[in-house]
Length: 267
DNA sequence: ATGGTCGCTTGGCGA
Image (cartoon, rainbow, N blue to C red; front, side, top):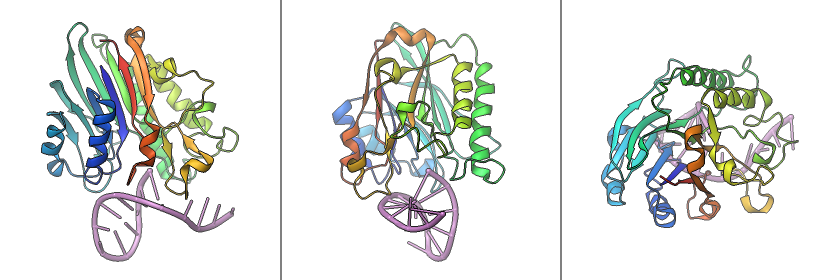
């Protein structure tokens, strides 16, 4: 089973790119973030025609929004609000796997956190930290029955030194500050979650999933960050067979600033 | 230290 996560940055604008992702990777499940469209105007038919008739969507006007697209039926679809806001940052669903049984998928779009990494002067950074704390606390209460879980999304944090182009130069840049990374590690430990991509790609290797739009040519300096993640519960660790980052997608026509990240599980 | 570019919308916000 292939599961892909991708911050698409407007699903309507990038339908041709989504088709290309399908042709290139052929995922069984695609989790999207920043669809930037209200649920009612989501392009259900176009996406069903791409081979994904089962769709779970939580969208709002202009900002955020998440969706799960699937070749297999989705059951127990739900959304959750965090920090008292209805801002469409979390959707989940269950797929029934032949031998494994139910597989629970959680798709997140974590707040980016603004520019200044200080919650006292930057409310957005406070929101980001609170969001992570709330998810960690909720995580601890998840039933033990759902042992097979996957958590994906644009987490907006690059936790490892090799998840950024320069660990030294990004220490005080939102997405790579110690306080965020600690909050993320706390959430990860609450699972317990395994960073599935890093199970496949060694920690020594630099890997990125995002390159800023604010650069004339993103390939020149390769100043990227790994902001998009796929985690699995401990029970699924021995099912991991492959991980892939579709770097080429950053050079496609009208690219998103994020590229698809894919995990293959033997289930 | 600053500004750079996108997308959703048409003035400005969020990333």
